[in-house]
Length: 494
Image (tube, rainbow, N blue to C red):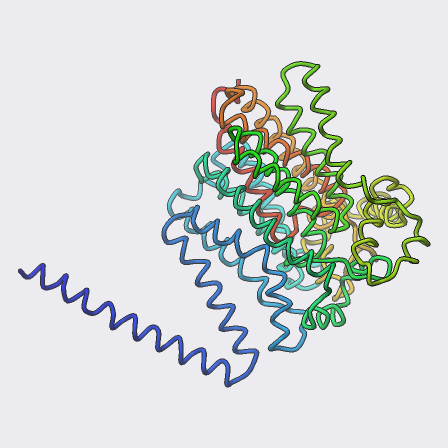
């Protein structure tokens, strides 16, 4: 009787508590609206962080899906804030995912103890790389510690997702990246809108205010960003989604499921061409090559698969001409899609003719021959970021567009070599796991997708900065951790 009374009393109090919470939220919202845009923004960001943290109370996997859902839309939410506040170089929205990631990591450490940070052979070099990056936060050569903390958001925080990859189930890999495919398709629709209709006023305001994104302009037209923070992020995300879509199509049984996955992959190829990201197109071709060739068992079958790989190139360039720069400038500015597609075709079919490539090579030569020999142990974790640029401590005038060289400047040459070793070791693990798995089974299919993604990590970090891109870097480190979780399997270590 007493127990029943207690339960009943608790149930009666619950609606009352909900009413109080709802009223408090309403009062806080009204206060924020009346007091100004800054307070409204902080309330919105706080609410977003709380909503993203809530799924972690149920499981790590639910929380990761929530954060992955938020990331592709961070860019447009960042730009939409200027509907209520004036432009600022310091945007607190970028603190949400790092804060949540660190809280989730601390929860894992509390549950599994500190030893989980180096519990597998692949985790040990990752822990060493993290320790080096953490020490470089306080390097005085980069300027203030604030610059180092800015660098930590790009270099160090995404590495936390390595441990998430080690802590989830094997099957979660498929659930997560199926989700990524859907998000890539949905978010890309807004990129199509930007190309064919144009930017809304609040995004045009952001473009006119920011002084750190000159590459948005291509032949006198603004390239699309979709819902992301920049065009490179859109291209890399679509590239990952496209590879996964074809991978899941290969795994799926013949029927509507397989057709849907392949249809999604083809649609994402079209989206990738509209992004104007040539390095992502090269990465896509490399990733699809690995994906298809790992499924071949004979030389004849491999040659047939190589022939099939020509289909994406036909889709991309079948109806697009690689025009000269003067011809592209002559295209009317209202035909934005035609200009972007011509730019994409020209840079992909004849990359050596692009001025951006020669400028990139000049910057790399400066890094290798002057900057790194002068100090091979690192200038500070934020020395290659915009934070260092504002403090006058940035080491190059132009963006480096090479993650390995950026890491070498920031944390030292040993750190860059350590990252290369981590990627190589993960590739070895994935290859051995794929060989040991049943060729027709789900495990082999997932490992084929992971190996395809790994190949793009090498390329896109050499011709880009994939491991510091907001929505992409966490996924990359997650894949590495997911592979590392099975490293102690006897089939892998023999």
